[in-house]
Length: 419
Image (cartoon, rainbow, N blue to C red):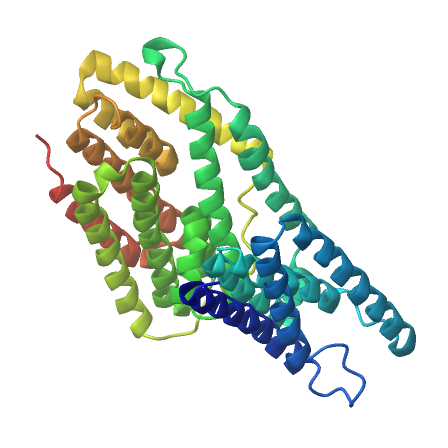
């Protein structure tokens, strides 16, 4: 080993030692209350585990690659036997520390095999997982069976179904691409699911602005209907109810921007000003009503779980229909036909039109036309929620919500290029 190699190897061994000390710090802190002789392994021991793995990695690198496997098997047998003996004397001490010890050895070896950065990153993630035991277990205790099933269904439609779908166009104008349609279904399901869990973790009473933000990410229409019903029965809560509705409605516009940007990033320069202006105007109105004070309304403790296979299939069919109609109307009437479809589609579901136009803009649809159609769909959807607030919540709520949403819609449309 020349001087350059010696310095490099020493640095890699130091990284392996640091990995062991990092994991050992967390393990030692967890066992800090245990009496002397009651700790299975602590800071120093885990540091040595990491250094041992690093040494094994260097030996395998210099002498024989198979040597690492033999050394790991010997280490695993020794550590497992030690844990079995400790378990017999101390009772059930769990498997976490055993797995952490084996992982420390592996990461120490990986660091000296030329992947120090990756090993260090994995060590940080490992320490975080070990340290957040109570938090993770708390989340698991609050997880309902239907939510677990929904998470598994999300994995099913994304990891299992999506890769096997054909990635080519079918039907008139080759408008129906099964892979792209299902990928967009997965995108919307993932965003809605994230908003649902963000609200569940934050709690329904952590503040109407924060909770309305998360709830709006999951379903702004559901929040509008819920708070409108509250406003009809509690006139004293009209101001804060309007604030909650407007926050949820305003969240729709960044969501649309996210969806469009994921499908076609080229839309972002032209789409960002109108959608963010619509969001900003809506949020400002929400802040105004929130600052007026009053009794805080209760947002729904649980929104309806946004992910079900039946819902995903229905949305996929709707998206396919909108994409097919969009191509047909554009071929027959040009951009004007698309604008009409955007207005009608936005009355029911803004996501389908956003996705359809974003995909079409990847082809021969002008970016300006796609942007205009997306903004029209958002404006139409805002009008629908203003009408819902008035019909369900009454005149007082409508006088607060409708002007704000109309102003936001008009502001966004005024920033669209119609050329």
